[in-house]
Image (cartoon, rainbow, N blue to C red; front, side, top):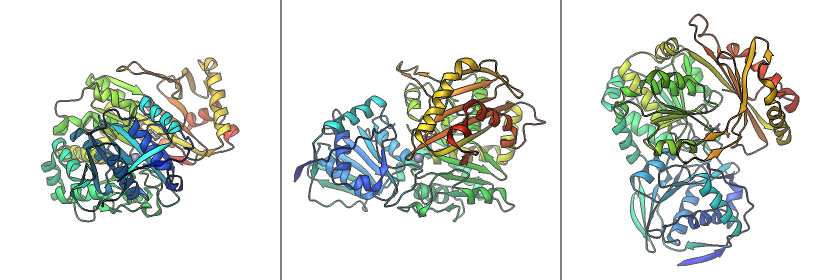
Length: 542
Ligand code: G1P
Ligand code: ZN
């Protein structure tokens, strides 16, 4: 039976391209999630008779919302919903399913790397038929719809068993419950030399993968242990838990400290990696060496041809503006176009769809390629493994050889979290106002070459995105970038991105924070970080 029910007035938080993110209790208000889901459906032209994909990262409220999406889809004319078993789909696996099954779109339930649980974060996000996050004009349309909507449609009755793989019907709609791993693993087998990686594991290569009690557990067990023959126990925290075991499923040096400590110890295995809540981010650590995401992007681009899926070479490379210029040096040497985009994966979508780039990445631990339209944590891990299997050298040796060849972009991000929003806005406002006066200014040994605010002209659709971060370039290739986070849930987060290029093998192996010390001092002098925020040190250094 299909019912039409009144929605509750939507409180109007504007969902961005990472979807609607809120604490679980907000989504639990009767009619709240329903309002947003109905608004999404209302904005899908041609949904009658089409296929929708649904699944999420397994966090608290994932299963309930998966069922809700299915019931509402049945009442909104979809012909078929493809759902991951138990409501589980990693973000890249959902992107793949949308593409592979020519779905009209998909609903991904996740709050990425943020904590999960009854009082923690949840999210609902819509991806379009290319498998990527809905572009801004679609999210804007969804948002306006939430403001006018008064009713939603839902199919009552009938049983949905998300635990059982197979087909069922809900009214006139077919529900297909799929193994969340199978199609994704098959895609990985087309890109990478599984035989070579299997041989490497068979010869004693040891690895630890920390799934952080989040969605990549089942994927990593199947791909790394079952298919590639990594030793049992390679995957740790491999069972997705609704509260991620009480941890932040954020693969950085703070939240994956145990893995980092292991990799720096004498007992370190050859390779360490981790992924986040929904499986799109990655952390790469070799024995005795952390590989920054910016370096990882450059290294993957330089070596991608060693994997079968990229043997023909790359069309181009894209990186977000705050990501270090290490990839630029690779692009230059390989004669490839390099695109600099604003922060956020959505900007890569057009470039990937147009075939202008093959590989892209962000300093925030997101790397991916044209195989899907989301960043992909396990993909990055497998590309690394493929490269290691071919080159047969330790990670550290490969990274250091790369620096010797291309020079090293020493790089770090300093985050000031939970800053008073007014203070953070004032800091950015003053900084913007000062840009015209900064050229030529000398701070210690640094001389400012240019200072501007980044705006992006999309080469594919001609759209312009302004105010994408303040960047100050010093002579010699050093740089500091300031921007406010667009994903935080409380107060403001100021991100300060610091970078120094060092082409000298006598000095390039030095410790990162020490190498950046004068740029750190200059950043505070330029932006008045301590003065505005009252903080003398960042909360998180990555
Ligand atoms: C952060 C990262 C950005 C990433 C986004 C979504 O956004 O910095 O690179 O695309 O999360 O995962 P921010 O909080 O900086 O706006
Ligand atoms: Zn994520």
